Image (cartoon, rainbow, N blue to C red; front, side):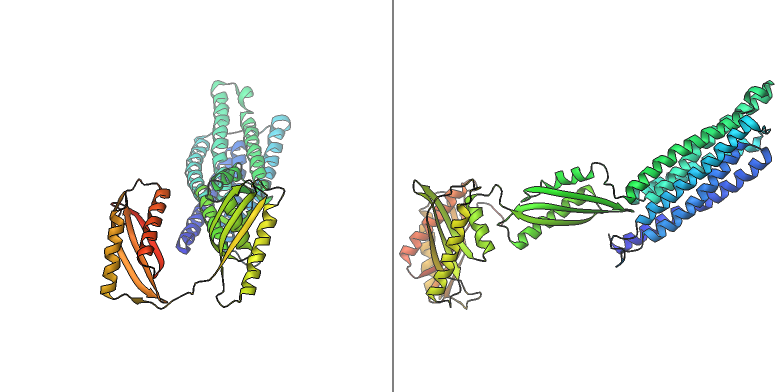
Amino acid sequence: MTEATMQAQVREKGWAAITSVVAAIFLTSMKLVVALMTGSLGILAEAAHSGLDLIAALITLFAVRVSDRPADESHPYGHGKVENLSALAETFLLLLTCAWIIYEAINRLVFEFKEVDPSIWAFMTMGISILVDYSRSKMLARAAQKYHSQALEADALHFRTDIWSSTVVIIGLALVWFGEATGQTSIFVRADALAALVVAGIVVLVSLRLGRRTIDGLLDRAPHGLADHISAVVAKVTNVRRVNRVRVRDVGSQTFVDLSVAVPRHLSFEESHAVAVQAQAAVRTVAPNADVVVNAFPISENEGVLERIQAIAAHGHFAIHNVTTHWTRRGMWIDLDLEVDPHLSLERAHAQATDLEMQLRAEFVNANSTAPSRIADINVHIEPRPEELIQGSELRPKDAHKYVRQIEQVRSGLPRTHAVQDIQLQNLNGKVYLSFHLILDPDVPIGEVHSLAEEMENRLRREFPQLGRVVIHAEPHNSKT
């Protein structure tokens, strides 16, 4: 998330919280005045409810300001838990208010009768309240969903319950008015107190639900199904053999994910890191703004013979190439080239080859191995490691022309080839370096491509014994690369 995006988020969340405070002040004042004028316990309960909303809105305003502070040394996961604490405080306030409303309602129903005046002001007050609550709840819900803010979500829930409770109060006042109009006051006079009980019941249910979610957040309960979804998408990443553990926690609007993935042990450190980066990208397709940590650890499961040889060489820091294996009744044969420091003596170079051979034999006699475990022989060809940068020079045009002519002649005798391009010839350490692009039919199997390139190289070497390194780059016909 960029700095500009973060600042925009802070501004929008702060504006939503501030407007909620203003709306709560207006509604609380209006309901309190009308409740005192009419004597309606339902409206008084709503005034208390709105007063609670005002306190909750102030708590929310404080919470969103603190929660958006960046992580520091004391709070490495940020300050997002402040939103959970604010929501928990709002829950206790809601339950406390409900206890008072229930007490007053039961007192009016059983012990103390108070006359209610269902005036036009009472109905207008509750109607205005519903309109304001609706607009506030929609705005807060949008901001909460956009920024995953539990504090704003709790505030939106407060205003949404106000809509339901205000509707119940209007029904209670309407029944009182109907009783007075029809002369059946004794039947409907207590409808206002009953409406207050219904309001309290609604608020209690919402409070308990909000409290449960808040406690889940404080206890780092993972979002339902998110860990399984993350595991499924990460398992599809190339070279991820297994997803061992996924842990998810929400801290305010920020989601933190850490997971462990198994990768083939023959991968280098850079390759393993690349797998981890791809896994992070996969997680963010599910949780876009998540802070993701991926731990990649090597495993040997489902490895082929060549992968196991490469893994042993990489673990021992041996530079090998041209690895071939085959199987006979005597067992498995392994042939490979080992690159060593050109300044080493034969004795020290041979010691490295022997060390590699012993490690390979130990690997393939592992009782848990599914590959052939009987080694017939291991042949290690020792060769000097190439120098990093060799000084070369271009061939004279007259000499180069002979090579170019012979290359084209050899190519014309091979099937499914079209042309030779980008021929390069240099003198390197008394040998001739040769590279070129061989253009072939695009549907030629790669095995046949290799055979054709090998045949071409062999013919050229017979013609030019002074050839050193020969590199033939195969390209499909009509390719742009």
